[in-house]
Image (cartoon, rainbow, N blue to C red; front, side, top):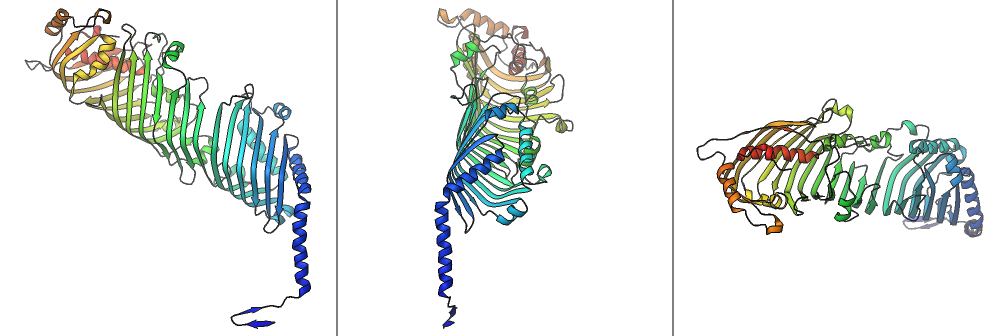
Length: 554
């Protein structure tokens, strides 16, 4: 033994050094020379495990023993269409290609003697996955269970501490039209921890889709929604199961066709939608419940900054289809996914409705700006609704950026008649702003007038609306216009008689007599939900101005 100050060096026999060097050299040589053997062996074993259900090839397999690490440069697998069809698998054929697959920290002895496979990390640099759907007969849940059963028949457990994909490109196709994907996701990033399949997997209440937690991000995602004229765009989609959060940097629902093409094709009298949400977040998501039962349960959601534009052209879109049973609340109950979000906050949202009238062929518009407020008890889960059946929307905004509108809607989601109520108020504003919709559609123009205050309180269902309206205004004057083909100028005599003998210029009038509207409106079945609300309120407005409600324009 040789002693040196501060530490010791042991004199190692030269023969031992030679043996160790020879062993290391042998490992290196075998690692190079046995690569083809390793690739053939891995391929054969995986094919045997597949039992003919898919085909697999791999290239560039490299095994490192210290520490134990398997690296595969290229891995390709594809389903066997005949087998998938025989087993009524709805998703076939499928194919994936993986580049840069690394499996690290495999525990050898438990795998050999106990059939318990434990892996520290699996990383994949790039994964391309193509899935085609040929029918709707397959059952994804039974397929999921088949995988679990198949794995459990071969091993007692499979555990992976960490799993990640740096870039996943996913394509979903219709097998009949394979060249045009139904949707595609590019550059998805995925990471997860605590993967486990064992005897307790079926009853495991700690794992979400077999993981203890996971994260995924999608920079951009664009999908054509089937059987609709719309395309959905998502940007900066992030899902974090540990934080129980789903966030979207921007969501767009935009038409894939022009307005002119849409209104000529529409037979359901539905407004064309153009929706943009600048920021959308769902917090407190119960991912475990989602993975086990398919229910989306969350604590809150937040919509910050957005726009919704609705468009109709009455020259082509006719009111020939019944709209009974199609209120927003009733449509919410028809969504096939069970969900429950107790509170949704909305801020800085703009809504506009544009319509080209049938009679004059001109476009009118009404704007609701800076909408903010909240939605409470947003759910279609009947177990929740039996205890609390009302969906409540408490919203505020400004009409044409001027008068402040407050509205409180309450929808009874379990009511067989679609019962709901709404009450609210509108503050001081000039009545001239309403010419943006009145003149193009009704060929009348507000010449003067100031709204002091309006308030309404309505109880309604699918067929009837009853309630009251207080509409206080001052100095109201109206102009009846000539047809646009005749120059559109004012009909002076008709306008004079209307203002002098029919319309009250103020409410209360000069004698302090006040007209409070008692509303009783029967809905026309073909009128959409929001048009029925507009007709109800318009009846109250016209009664307050002294005009017989039977002359309410359509």
